[in-house]
Length: 420
Image (cartoon, rainbow, N blue to C red; front, side):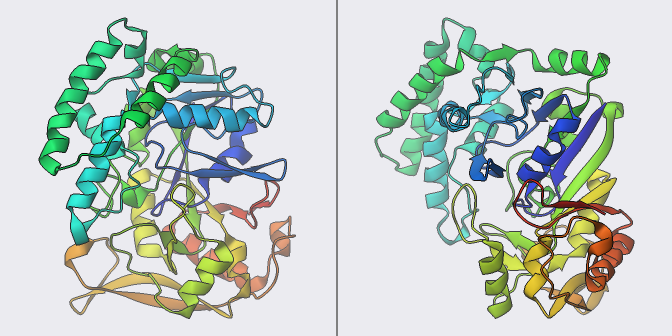
């Protein structure tokens, strides 16, 4: 049995904490897509740690963690992350497995990412410059190097061949930065990676499922960044929705049971791209300040706005979401009035569908207003104790989406989560 936990907005929904909360209920936590552009923030022993590649179940001694074939893996980031995890007394190699089909991010992928973004001028995608896009391009172009290639004695030869191809592309961009330090770091990290448990991921995970083990597939980024169904072209390079679990881990669709969608009580986005409910006023700034809305990976200020139920309903539909987790509900404690977008006005017509390409349309969000609760909810542990105004807000969201909010996160701490 496989349950899926993923984000329903533009990422940064607080998935890391939620995976960490659910992890003790599962035998295996498996990442199925994305790369080090994801940043899952956890608080361990009161200290903050951000994981970019390692699954969020790493701090649970009896939980196995798998990096699946749908991920693109940066060996340098993995090594740095391993050292951070080790500082908490956890040996990451003990319960972390890596699929041999997982594609590698090379130093030249990072260089290509930077060169490509620079060439776009004012039409930048907002890439994290981690080499994600170029690595996925090599994957679909059937050129990439994979983790299993590390075990081949001809790995260096394969690397040089691909590097020469990349160099021709970099020359066409006029990119001439020295990346020799990146390469030195890379080969040191590659040697370190060879000490990990490299497995045939699809056989590994299916054998565990046959044994009756419970698997939680952990998504990165968010559904509205899906390469097919997100706000193209301002999207990531992988399938972030639940369908990506099948291709990113090698499991059949009928193995998937629960799809747990994570949404903030409001909405944020990092980087460029359409964002219908974005607030460019004092309210947006208050959300950013109170919510500490700065990218876990890049540190960039997040764009902030009210919850977009049109986009959220779309994300629930394409993912088959069975239950919702609402995060950062406490950020709304201070607001006298809240708004929820219930439809889009496009060319004078009201609609509740996400259009094919938001970038080509002027979208006017239509809101329903709700009275804020103006109560500190961070110490509440039972749903019965939640303010009446908050219960009304959540009830409306439940009814609009037709999917129940089953958990509410009311602070960054591990224990700050309420079963609704």
